[in-house]
Amino acid sequence: MAKQLKLKNRHYWILSEPHGRGWKATVDEVKDDGQKAPVGIEATGETRGTADDAAERKLRRMLQAY
Image (cartoon, rainbow, N blue to C red; front, side, top):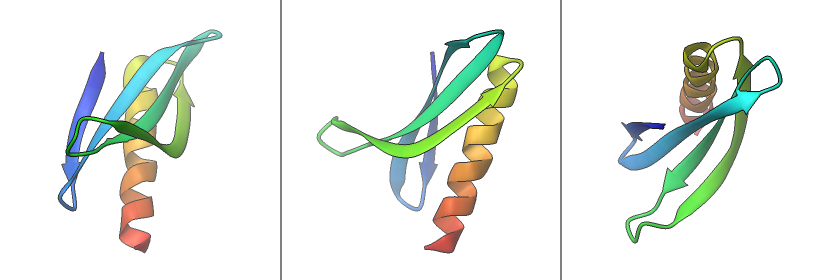
């Protein structure tokens, strides 16, 4: 399952998967032609929600820097 975001006219997916005793979330940008490109953001958490939220915060901070 992926969480979809639209920020600064770009589309992103936050993808989560089990990782050890917790979860790891990664962020991909989805291009207009449907191709995905990794953004280079990873976050971990005890639950899927905490990992997803941490990845989203990192993405928002990165986009504010540009």
